[in-house]
Length: 330
Image 1 (cartoon, one colour):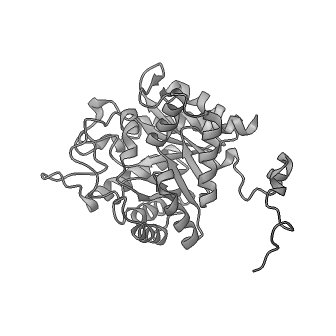
Image 2 (spheres, one colour):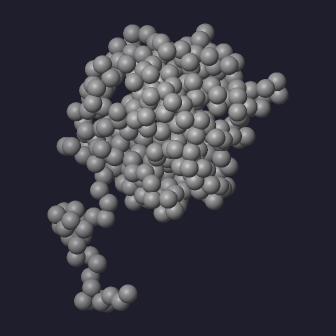
Image 3 (spheres, one colour):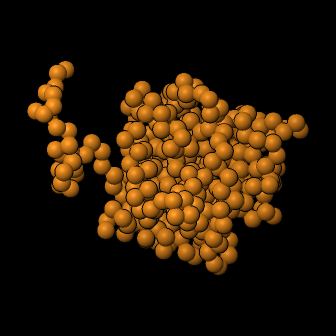
């Protein structure tokens, strides 16, 4: 391929005006690219999360208002995470299977108020276990794969019955996507989507999330035995291939910005919808930089979200979703 050279070609020409920059833009960010994660808690008042400035745990009574805010801003989907009361947590995470748990009541509250907004629900046991792991553990503390998958299947069915539109297994057990898909089909939930956390890394960026769901201090050991090694990239492609073969409708890479190379590799290899999770540590870094006077929030939020689109992401889960959507609509 040949191109003209300077001065016949001046790459600054399209950059001169706002209209030409917009016309030549290779990627476009819109509110429909965003998924807004919400934390649910018991009680009557919102509970601010200290390590996530601007983020709160929302009581069930306030979820309808959050859903209406999202809909009015053009956000198509909400992702729900429960802060299960400590007295409802157990070694086997049985509260995950309670059809009247916080997650299921949250789904119903949103669907009753705003039926036309999507609801994505986390399928994993860490918000429900007393040991903080995503699955069942044996006497040595090892997380059991197959026994955990059986519980995850039942959890996904409970969420689908409550009205979840997308079940999102975030546990990283082998084979669980295929088992969940088969159970959804057999249970008549053929239209429920699966967004698989296909490449979820054992990351240092999850700390504030664990504060939000109150698992910090509960976790015995670490999650390196089932979440991915940050050193590995080709392994992510193998994980994605397996989840797609088992029936995932879309896949997720988590965390986000430190793993943009993985987002790009997955999109290039598979040409499927790939989502990225801009996780709590990423959000907190932006907010703390703003608080320190080192950054301007609006510009930094939009630039980082555009980076996901440029890498090939179909959408982004971000705690900045409502703020970003309102900026785009301003």
